[in-house]
Image (cartoon, rainbow, N blue to C red):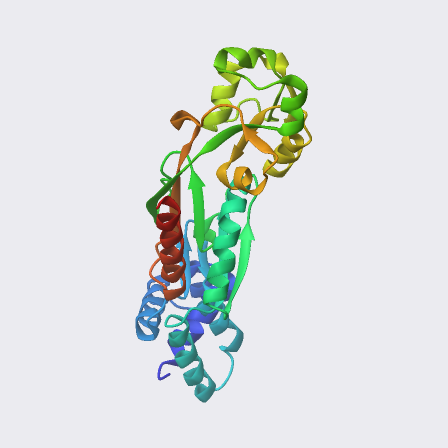
Length: 292
């Protein structure tokens, strides 16, 4: 590496998190900091930072640079080669986030991706909050509902998520199976803790079943499946859970309106990296094979 000023600038940006802060530390204009970062990223052929409203967050390559930036010029030259190599192979950590309900279908896909690329380690994040790609919290997000519109994200249409109205065999043995929608009012149901849930199947359930027939409410997908399996009532599960549990019986055919569109979301700074592209291809191949 023949320009130590660019390396030192990148180190300060990674350390303080903002261009203005790095400029103050270095005693230069903020435009100089931006020029150094752009030139270094172009020289290395990889993104060192994700840009967002609160500042700059180092990518994996940026974190690596920060750790060794105080070493000699010879060591920095070795670092440049290592950072270039990160964009060429499929290795390191892959962070994926989705709704918890999609876990039964997605986890085997993540496992097969790890088997295909043994230098990868997986972090799979689910939860109620929305993990922020612009802050580096995940490489790939699988999201449901309307198309995400956050700036600087690459959004691709993925597949539709089906929902299935099911009951345990013990429940059917005790209460019978509904013949059609008109019979639902005479049955018991498992529903969401959040009565204002925007999931299409929950909205349908709220309109099709009297509220006093929903006698067991849950806050997570895992709780929901456990309650249905226990025989307490009828409820909705995803295709993955239906296929995993032979004790579950579909009480009515799945309807198009119960499902929702899934989207693949990546940040523009990481979208073209070899690792992310390899996973997106693996995921799309699985989705195509599952439809055949």
